[in-house]
Image 1 (cartoon, rainbow over the protein chains, first blue to last red):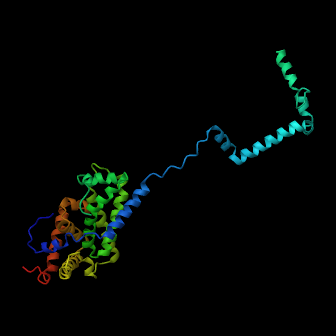
Image 2 (cartoon, helix red, strand yellow; image 1 turned 180 degrees about the vertical axis):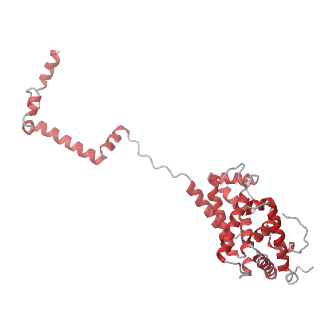
Image 3 (cartoon, chains in turn red, brown; image 1 turned 90 degrees about the vertical axis):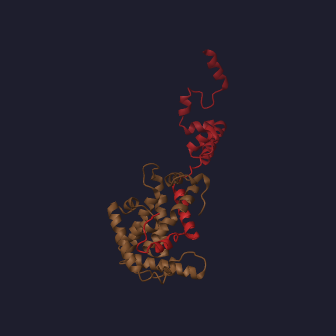
Length: 122
Length: 195
């Protein structure tokens, strides 16, 4: 604090002014609210929640477009399987006889015995 | 805002700034307790208007919070000096917008919380007289006188705040005091300061 001779009689006025700057509770609250806002803004944003870990199958489902897409693929696969078992000739006719020729003449449903024979020949 | 938590009491303002930047809410409270009264007092005496001074003090503190992220604990400016400088500049901006300063319109606005109606009125009158006298000074003289004789800063500190040399500060305060003494000469007896 300044300690000077009070030749001009001003010191009494200055003394009256010292301490007159006590802030009101409202001002203190506003300043602290500003401080909290700045601190909140400066804090790193919370990381986005990680996807639930569901193993490789969940990853595969995600790659395919999610569970709705997986169910569609599954339905198509099952339908194809049923169709192949119940009406193999129809499937072959749809393919224009290509499956017959590619299978070496055994058709879409070779007899299981033929596989054994092939294994035995080796 | 009196009484700092022991964990903070020994810490300098610069260290508190670093703590604040790291998200410590306690640092904000302690810095507010230390610096807000100075900013408000400075602004109130320079502007002569309590409401305006509160706006300036709040704005200056906001700038302090925003500066905390880049604050260097060692070698950087003292937060108090930095804040005084911001307050001085904000006050200068307001005075320029106002045009030439008019005497204080509302003396009661500067009233302190002194108990008792008469004491409060007398205190308000003294402060109003001082503010009115300060208002007659050029901005730089007013800032220098307030910082030196009311805020109690040293001349080098004031030189840093006002961005002038120490000799200029001495000149500003000397001329400011002479002008103040002349302006208040006729008011001392009426305000209970009769010799």
